[in-house]
Length: 499
Picture 1 (cartoon, rainbow, N blue to C red):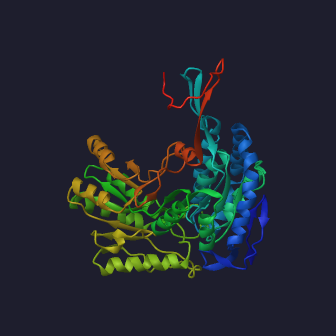
Picture 2: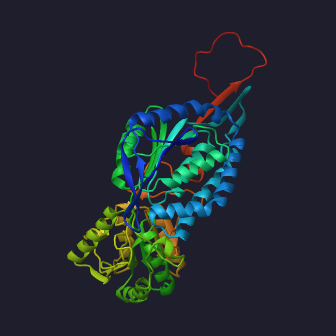
Picture 3: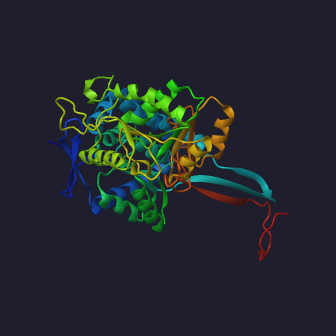
């Protein structure tokens, strides 16, 4: 069985803690590798070497740092198929979806190539007699990212690319469920010319997370995962004086107005609800048709599309719609929530509980489910299911539909499908959710805008990627300089004011 490693000081390094976690093949349920779980001492040693390497990297001019990222983009494109296959093998995604995972990370790296411009400060000439003022953005030092299983390529790149472009050293603690791709990315960064120690990949569990949060050298921490863990990391990291951004759970609503194109809406819901087996923080998990007639029309369009979905392993071809869940525990959780929906009175229109795939009976596959007449008090409405389950909540009016999305504790993403510009504009202005789609089901911003939710979907002041990333990974220093033509005798004891 393959034994995976950490990536420290430019090379793969075996774990020394003696603790390991199983890495499964989600399609078969078999253990295909084991990954070392770092101890606190291992994590601290990685941070120490990163701290030694970081000053020289920060002193490297931004254009030269950007050239490393340019080469990294070239290498990502070269190895796209290899990365996608490794990602699919451990996560279970289809190959096209896995390639998309890499591509969306690559786009953020491309944006970060603009670091020389994004790191420019401000300058005021003659702010006072013989006085100039200017600001500069400087690296924090050593920073860290704790990233989830569902995007093992994209989210690590969202974290480490801007951090490294800003001149920081980065400690990446990826998910132990699919750890191979983050190591491969680190090797490609090394091949692109990144100095030893600037990107360290330390595999681990809660012990490693706590070591990151408590290490006084680490200045900032970024996290993506569930809301309870996001709250824990945010509170503990802030208590230790770190800059922290945490992105948590979601329950994304898509409102369908009576005037919407029902075929377009149904296609959007199927792709956004069942793609990647629903294991996306931006998945649409709640459809909110306005009026019973709209709901009936929508359900009629959805059922044949959902029943026609092809579920299988990534090796079955590019026409597979989605694959297995990442672990057996994830499968049990989803099926338990499905049963709770039935028990609490929701109507199960499409039942995927008995889904079985010949030759893959031990895999973590879950068939597609569609619920109708879901209400706010049901667990399947309140909980982030993270599986191939779409709930339909019938709204009496536009205001009722709006209230469903606005009243939910999560506020990551939302969408509205309508032909009416006034309705769409009102929705975009009033909704208390961070990312909004208008006839777009998964409104993930492009790399040069920022990604982030509201309410219990996000903790911290700054979002991921885009300009916010460069603000998060730098501190602003302001300099007031005076170069007088002559030296004035005596000191000044009153606060200086502008003359």
